[in-house]
Amino acid sequence: MFDKSDARFPIKSREVFVNHCGIGPTCRAAVDAEIKIAQQHVTEGTTVANGYDAVLADLRSAAAELIGTVETNMSFMRNTSEGMNLIANGFPWQAGDQIITYRYEYPSNMFPWVLQCQNHGVDLVLLDNTTWDGQPTDSTTPIGWSLDDLERKLTPKTRMVTLSHVQFSSGFAADLRALSDLCEDRGVLLVIDAAQSLGCMPVNVDDYKIAAIAWSGWKWMLGPIGTGLLYTSPEFRERLQLTMAGFNSMAHSLLGSDYLDYTWEPITDGRVFEYSTEPLTLAAGLAASIRDNFLQYGPVAVFEEVTRLQTILREGLAAQDTYMTAGPADAHRSGILSVTTRPDVADADGSMKLLIAEFRRRNIRATVRCGYLRLGPHYYNTDDEMRTVVEAIHNAAGR
Image: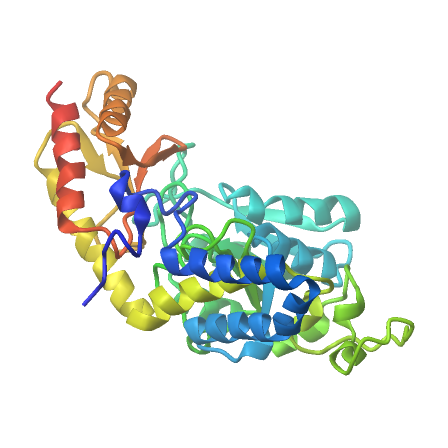
């Protein structure tokens, strides 16, 4: 079913790449789309701008189809941080308002809210760390958080809950259904960082009550660096104040190029946040990646293939006595398979270094974050590639 060829994913001829939770490789379709726009710019100059609206519309349309919404709810961003800051800076905060997040969030979903604490006297409430089954723990190794803790910390002053769908270090995935139901029941806005899920896990916004979702295009999305997307619901968008504005933010920009018309009439859909000239090559590349990978096969099929490949890795880890998966096979499962040394390993740090060295020797690409070795295979990886990773794990364990 899946085309996993080197022609579509040239990285495969160089290394076994299981680092899609980091900076992922672009697919050939994305690069081809970028080159087409860049070549047009070289040969035709400013006329490349004639296709400006069509390129961005195609990206919004593809992104909307990916998450089950309409393109008017989508905005092209440079990264996750830009989307989160746009939300954080544009929301009408009042002193004493509360924001809840997890204490070990990725910086993109932490610093924008810390800034509001400094600028507006907002209180940042942090969810405690838990074990994989939701029990409180004093461990400083990030794992996840619990709905029980969130429910206890919700108050009448809580305006927003902002959490990653998948935690970047452990791979802990939130139950979006239960999370959105709780926030809706308590009248609290829910903002999701989906940088570690979209492109790997299916997310349909019609299934949840989510105010906004921000994510980057160069991890699981297999798109160009410097791209991202933002979903905002119409109701939430109406509440956000503009913190950046330009000609493209205004309704009359859609009618022509009267640059001396300073009428303040912002666009009401997601284009309002695309305030100035966008990088067309990158937008075209990200749209091509979405269509060639995730819309062609479907997000559900992609995630099923990722988890099938993970099973090969899990079985390989279970067959030796040094390394182990950090979380359960099903509950809170994501595209990230986090690996640690077993508790009774005498020199845990040394054993992890042996594994990393073995990966480098075999041209296997993975990353270490917060004490975990993160394995993030994508759907285009093969069974043989997973067996190469397993062999490397066994070889490191036997040293």
